[in-house]
Every structure is written in structure tokens, then in C-alpha cells.
Image (tube, chains in turn purple, orange):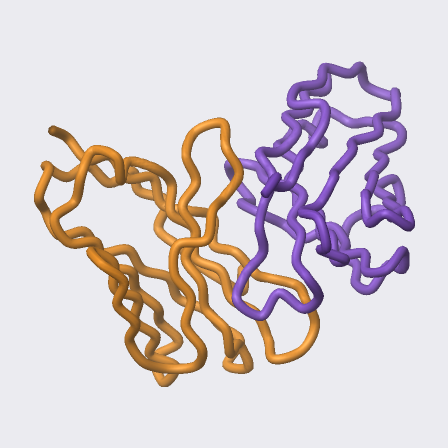
Length: 113
Length: 111
């Protein structure tokens, strides 16, 4: 059974640019959550999508957005990149409510220069 | 103050040692508690989970939750070099699908 797939694995962007990250959840999983991981802050919740609807959102500026497609694949977009956006972006999927935890992908390492 | 606090370490122990990893939290409404393990350049993988208070054992791993003290622990017995990783605690409320994570403790087990 394929796990959660995130593409690309690594990305280098320049300040002011925008970026789109992609996540394919485990087959059958309808919930996709996104987290930002940095050494100082740890994992911080960005948002969650379920059946193409944003179900929950963390405390990130509007530059961070996402969407989910009918096949449950999800994308997140960051516009007007800042140096502080450099982080590992993790996608996690679950069937519905992940009462006992998600399955994470390996992440996309974004570096903003 | 962060909702979940975790000592970042690093922690270095000899092979075969007992390892104790801990987290404290501030929100008494947390009901589900998890431990994840994260190897370098990988995403976190779920290691253990418990609901509410109590202990849970799985092989060399034991998870403990003390809700009265708002304190959770993970014990690793007979630690192995393959246990070298970052360990993250996580918890969630009874509703919603958002997890609150600690910043992780880096563990190295020396052969």
C-alpha cells in the first residue's frame, strides 16, 4: 500500500516568489492536513482539508493557502515568500478524524534565499 | 507559552540503557496522546498512542499519561542504535483533527 507522497522533496526559491507543494494521500484517505516544521517551533498546524473543504485552519498569514481535489490530492501554496518560510512542509492523511494519529509523508524541504 | 513543552535534548545514551522522554502540556482538555519517531530526512511515524490517562506497553516501548500532572512520558527499554531519532509527543482534543506537537527530543544511542 503506497504511503503519503509529497512532491517535490526539495525546493529552493527566491524571496517574493510563490511556490506550490503537492501531496497525494494514502488511497481511501479523505482528510489531508499540512504542517510546517522548523527547529525552533516544531510542527505547526497549517490547515486541514476533508472532501475538498477546508475543515480547520491554523494561525498562519493569508499567504498560505491550500486546496483539495476530488481525488483527495492536496496542494498548498505560499505566495510572496519570505526567508522565514524556509522549513520542512509535511502533509499527513487519515481516513476521517485521525483520533490516534496521522500518516505523514516525508515532506518537502523549502529553502527561501 | 506553548501548549506542549518538550525538552529538545540532545540526549545521548549507551546501547541497552533505559530512555525516558517527557512532555508537559497546558490544556487539560487534551484527550488523545501520541508519540512519533522521526528519522533524519523522513516524516514522523506514529510509535504509540493512548487515550486519556494510563499506561500502554508495546514491546520495548511504554507510554504513560498522567492527566492530573499534565505530563506524558515515553520509556524505551534496552535501547538500540536504531532508536536514534527525534521523538515528538503530540496530543489532541476530543473534537477536531488538529494535533499539537512538542518540538521533539533528539536521541542518540551509542553502540
